[in-house]
Length: 190
Image (cartoon, rainbow, N blue to C red; front, top):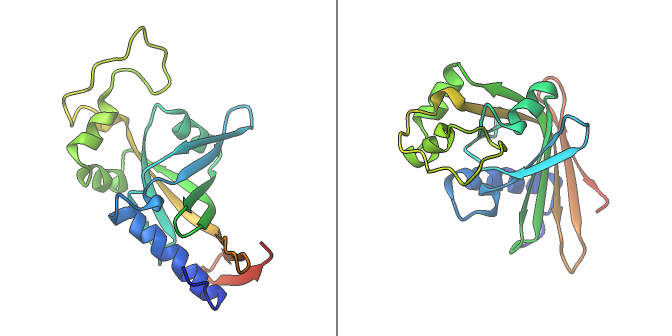
């Protein structure tokens, strides 16, 4: 990749990668890593699927089971980070923001309606994620049975860190938004 000329160019690259992560299942940004804080205060990481991204609102959406540790951790502490890395381009993006859980509202209804049946069936399992089982349970068959377990998580981006690993010199940009949504975007040392 050609290194960006300005911090604004790097931010635009990060936002374009997030947008492609929603529409392109082969994009490395389709499966970022979400970091939360567990009940003991330690970090907890997991791969998620990026379902929606709105660059103007600085929000992205992922889905989870309301019975999951992820949902409980975000209910207790809304702070979260998202990390994605494109190995071919050698670009890393880290996002810090506040998450909001949507289970029984219009946001969740729209997200559920837009989900494929194969995705919906993930939430129809009788066992909660992480629950001990005697043997692997059978796959759910009814795509509508899991609606009560479904939660959409909307993360509002507060800051973004973009890093390019380059033989000609690594480049790093930090962006953060104030309460009015105005960004400050600047070069920082890699």
